[in-house]
Image 1 (spheres, helix red, strand yellow):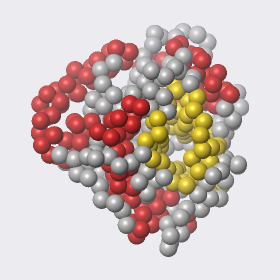
Image 2 (cartoon, rainbow, N blue to C red):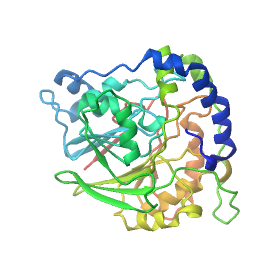
Image 3 (cartoon, helix red, strand yellow):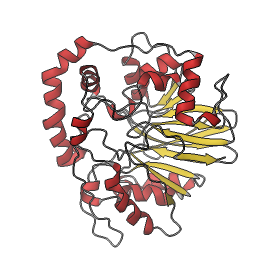
Amino acid sequence: MARNPELGSLGESIQRGLVTPLRRGFGALAERIGVQPIAEPTLAETIAARRRFFGADMVDAETGAVRSDQVVLSWFGCASFAVALGGSVFLLDAWVPRGATSGYVPTTPAEVAALRPAAIFIGHGHFDHAADAGPIAQAGGAVIYGTAEHCATARKQVDAPEFACVTLGSSESRPGARYDFELAPGISVTAVRHIHSARTERYAGADACEPVKPIPQIRDMRRYPTTLADTAHLIRRLTDPEGGVLLYQFRTENFTLTWHDSSGPLLDKAPEVLETLRELPVSDVHVGAVQGYNQFTNGLRDPRSYIEALRAKVFVPNHHDNWLPLITARGSAFRAPLETALAGIPDGPKLRMLLDPDDYVTPGVLAFDA
């Protein structure tokens, strides 16, 4: 949410109407409230958290180990997921939405840390994606993967950081740059540098998409009133820098998962990224961001370009929920536009819709046989 000239009128409005006044009026108070560290979880807490996020039948009741023959993703707001894949547990982004509301997402950073993820993969560094990465890694012992800027921001979130952070390029890396590595035996990972969502001029070609302009749903602010501590957390992290944007693909012998937390205008600004995405193996499941700055001009054209390039069997939307009610809406507003966008793709993926708040921390929604 830092000021960015590419964001267009929407980004300018958010900056003037929300970020700047909050920082000016409440920044000092937020700093005085301070950051509450997360305690290292016990084994009992890890078992309980994993059973809640992944399902009781996925987790050994004595050791907390997760099964390797199933893949489970558990959504905890915006673009953040806890994943059990190939016997490993890891996070995709690390932020429990709060500040404008409290309790809309029914979990806490402490419970997420209790999962003891082996790794945290950062898509980009804005507050709604990485604001809890440092405290969770510090408490649970996770290794963070991201750009040099993501690592620096996460380390600033805690005192005396003791977690590892693997650097995958920097904010200066070229779009389309690729990083290949192994997360654990039998789990390979590819990270691809791409670009953040941004407004572009209205496209009028045959494959144009209608604008998507859901009405902000501020009633959730009344239903889930915020606390002072949660508001302070949001204010502290509002201006965290993007630091570059990464897409990740995870592969086992029998399953491929691809995830990204922003969908940029690749067709207009970085078509070379699409070439890199087409070179990746076909995805069994593609979890991709659909809410973005270009939706008000070009609808879901940008997410559709990722979907077409990745050729997944199943598409799951993320970053489409009411994570900040002043400017966001519930995911139900995206169902019809997504169905229309996917219907125009020959042999396109099946849509596995996520709807807030019912699908938060609900392991049966995204469970797959590996």
